[in-house]
Length: 204
Image (cartoon, rainbow, N blue to C red; front, side, top):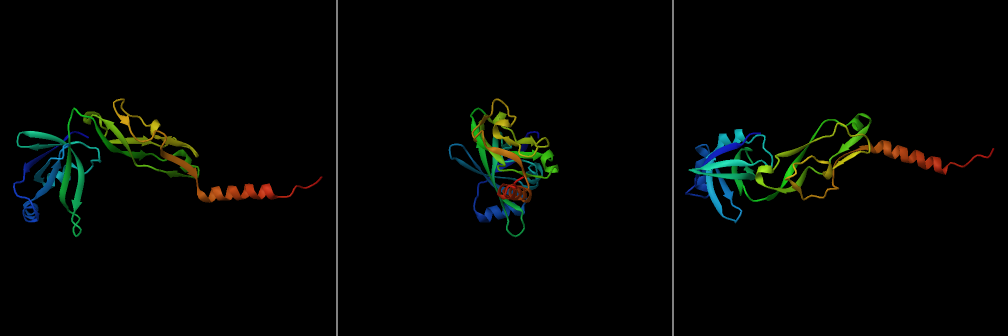
């Protein structure tokens, strides 16, 4: 995904009244939080935000232009109307390009495991991992192909293909994906083994 650029303006008046008027005018109220705790109240065009951020992830870095300044940010939180589902407010978190950051990155699974076609079940214990790196090295998501997984095989965090500049904070032995036999088959197999072990021996 290419760099997403949004144009915003500073909000002089804050509160529910001014925010409501901004929404009526097609503007989206937002707050940008800095690394030091400083906040900046802004608003931007609602349609531009909706259209440009449809496919972003938690770790997608956006560029916000305010007057002659540019800011690199994450979308920290999106608030929606309970009645309409429309976006009514956004919180951004600003990052600094030369400083390492720690955040979570989505793990996206692709493919149908070979073991599933053989009767197994795919389990996905985690859906994101925590990493640390410079903003320029941060992946938007981590794609994992599980089509080669057979029954009783798994993919761990240490198996993920990542840029050398990205340091993994999550446990390297955490399981990302595994294929197990269906529960019914496992129970049936266990019952058969139990019956076989308790069956009396016949004398010749």
